[in-house]
Image (cartoon, rainbow, N blue to C red):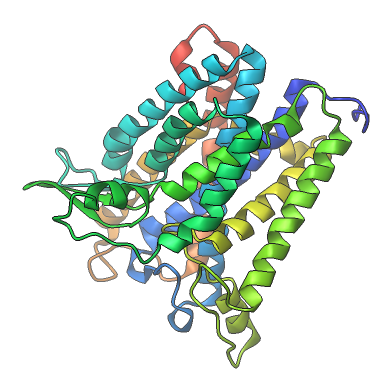
Length: 388
């Protein structure tokens, strides 16, 4: 029976929409990683080159832009709900600290191995799991701030970090390493045989996770769905209107868009935004869409497809590791069977094959993910399962 629009729903109902949204972006992530595995010969820049990127490839990549912002925002939101469950900021801070360290170690080991299949590695790519881990470590300290201060700080980081875009430090400068980690995507020479690539500068993501924690009270036990849905609507629409307003006038924080002869190329230029590090416009667009999807999923949570998406969202780290290793094995099998058919790479001829492969993999992975999610929910006594 659908819940009342005035009574606060049980916790599991509030979490279903969160897991469903997380599950949707996991599927977008799967699509993007299939692209990165089997379409390497058609690599895209950041932001993309409109003249050399066909619409299907542009859409595929743009859908994946939702993944990191939604993951990080929901991580902050989930941290608030964890504190509500265990009644205290000390419990939240401790969990964020230990899980953040776990994610950093995971990025340096199993995740990097899945991408490179090199041991010992010569290059370590510090990507989204690293960024989430460091953001959690930062939030472990920030949760002690008053909520208003946390929201102001998060908004200031998201809105203001583009002012720092022109700040760079030479590789031999004292601040090169911390600045490469925080904001300036680049290389860190760790030793003669090992380099680190800071693919996800972490400063903007700290702002996003702070905002996620700050909106946590919207999902509190005593909050009615009507109030929460109104807040999600206002925040989502406000972010999208802000994006349009800044983008129309080629405002602050982003490479300018330009009109083209074809409408589709003009639209591509308008929505061609920078991810590394994520610009203000990148975050306004993706978080605005994410908040409205969260609103839609809460209203539709009686639908069966919401529950199917929530399966993927209930065990995100398990899905992440599993699909990376599956894709690497499939790529090696492709090379063994067909050779390097696109220069230095084995790959598909058309982007449509990327979509078909992603759909087949999503179906194939559903049962093992559902099994693990059920195990995770059933075996509360196995403490390490909560990290996945």
